[in-house]
Image 1 (cartoon, helix red, strand yellow):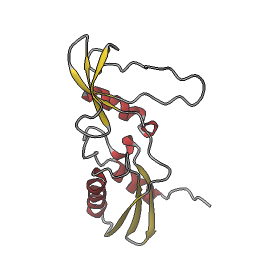
Image 2 (image 1 turned 180 degrees about the vertical axis):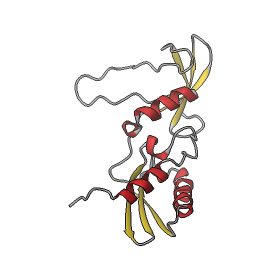
Image 3 (image 1 turned 60 degrees about the horizontal axis):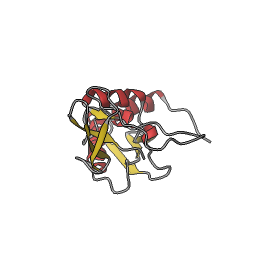
Length: 165
């Protein structure tokens, strides 16, 4: 049976969720959708569930350490951060605010997945600088494995595209 979070759990989840992503500090862990759960398991003890953007993501260690630090600074002496791989993280887990922040930062956000119906082939990636869909893939990998490097043919600016997963 799933119980509703307590006010303390909601407060602590808000604190943990406000931790910036170490690779994309413009977006928080809650906005990225990797913070799955937070449970108070006893007096001064909290368990946090974190799902990486992909298995083996090197940023998970930093995310865990940052969550532990923030919660300890707020009076929780025992913090356990567990990596949870199921259900797998998807770019659909990024919030609307997270997508807006990525675009504002100059990273083309991932396209939302199509739940059902026909799938379009060759969907265009919109340039976060000028809005043009005339873009070219320069490299399937950019500063992180989660992003691809593209160039806008209209404004000629390079930009990262957060790949759909």
